[in-house]
Length: 224
Image (cartoon, rainbow, N blue to C red):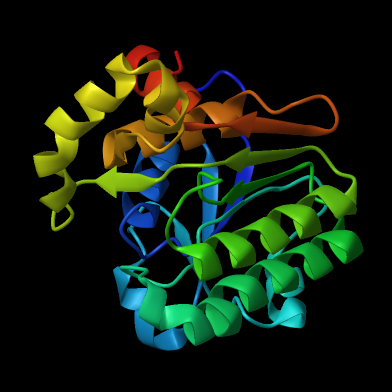
């Protein structure tokens, strides 16, 4: 259990990363509230308090927050691909704008945002939306953490394992080494431990950035 339990609000807490993170946060003694639509409340882990609300609506997010909370923003389009550009604007961007608008009103202690690794040669619409999200987070002025994975391996998300030999070759070539590291694969476990580390070790001020190498490092050492 964490020696410094925090009040944590999670948006997107019923999803692929969210359910795992919420359960781990609660097991470490943090007091967790999950904002979710009524139709998804049944997927909120039992260890958390479920709050009926809409992560796309700033007033709804603000009603779930209290001053001094940590908010973890995980809302996003599942299985993103280039054909979902309109959905990125409608869900991914709208939700982080709602969260940052609410944060200006309520003043959380720390905002954690999952973005995406960039630059990259593909997924330009997705990267553009997440970059706007990063700008919105930075503009608030409260302590923040931005986490930038590329592809998160886990149940139902294993196909990029076939690319591991390609990554190994790219890391061995000086010209492609930096890109291979920046766009490397991480696991859902790596992400959960990174987000736990961010919750328990917030920056005193400004924005801290966790790119793929830092995500892998958190997954290896895990917060104590």
